Length: 109
Image 1 (cartoon, rainbow, N blue to C red):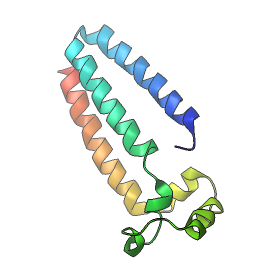
Image 2 (image 1 turned 60 degrees about the vertical axis):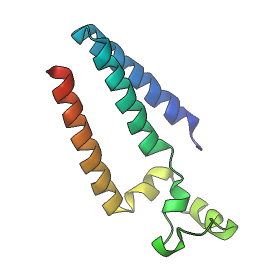
Image 3 (image 1 turned 45 degrees about the horizontal axis):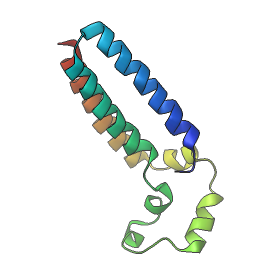
Image 4 (image 1 turned 90 degrees about the vertical axis):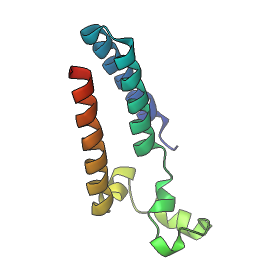
């Protein structure tokens, strides 16, 4: 992962959320569910090799060449490259939105 600061910040916010859930619910099980879902969510957004997935779909079975790696560096920041794929954004909103909804139902219930 190129940006360790984003991972550290995300994990600190997750720790704060786990603390709030623990204080509000007095449930160790709900704290652990929050931890597992939070780490999975952070891993799903920050850890994938976006240079690999930003290529044409027909190139996915093959390793990333040095030319493709170099071309991805000139595309701009990671957020701008992520925003260029509306299907990925829609997919992430759907999956993470549903997961957060189910988590909230579990924690608040």
